[in-house]
Length: 423
Image (cartoon, rainbow, N blue to C red):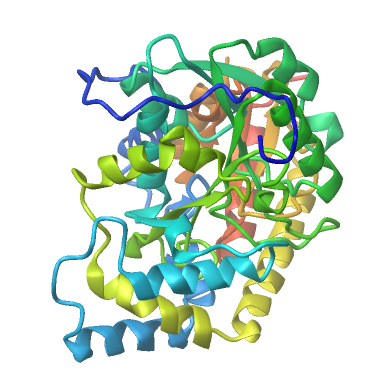
């Protein structure tokens, strides 16, 4: 390394190659939510309450800013963005995103460090496909976002899980990371702000993660799709701050902070002031992949500079204040339901993990049965923990209109009372 470290980084020299793809046999959030929606009682005339997915845009209180809407309209009317995009994204958008992220970094990104993707989902696909090589493995958090595991399996990339520790605010079990890693480990993934846990990692913990990655000679993939959605004791700190300790791929998008998940505009950013990714050939591999994949809609790319420049802090503050209110409602109401325990009040993102005690229930054996019966009897959708790697837990979203959240939790309480074991 240029900074004098003796660490031998364990990735490099691999070029993206087109391998045979198999279907990954794994749970996904979308598949399980579709199963629960198909299980609804069609005779129940009450509105369905969606506590299982992170899309608050359907509620008027969570609408995006007019600055973003105006930017899209201006981009379309200009007729400057009706052509194909370059494969890595148009230059004005990449420049604007680099400058936007530079506000929080101790060094400067350039447009060449930014690659635009169709949402953060494609960013995950690109990175995991590029890293895949025979015998390689990647370290994923448990609980985590299951799309990582699905994509890794598609690319024949071995997955190893390290635990997040609820008793420590869902911090990474760094001892487990060191025990899991070997000479074939390429990277560890962190999701901060946390999906599904609602946690925000402190500066000190992020630094320890970077130092552990450096010690092991691996990169960090930092999923920051919920960046800046922080309303607890810890401010959001981007992992890229520690890019000089260990190289970081930052994955992000406008989906969550601007509440426009359907616009499908994301990015991969190389936070790597030591140039390790360039030397290893990984940047070239990303470009090779993007040469044979689809691009984000060009008019949305064209709107990005105006979106980033014109969105006022009042819009962000309103969103944060609303999430703080709904997080409080969720945490307080869950305490009234004896079979549910919330180990940590959420500090960020849009979710909280809740432990399910089936021993208090008469005829429910696990989290999946709980969610199926809840959807059938109460028209409330909650994601079972098996979707995120934690059996007999639930992931609950609080990013919905407060009165709807109150009603949904009240229905869950009624569901518990109906199924509670008789004393």
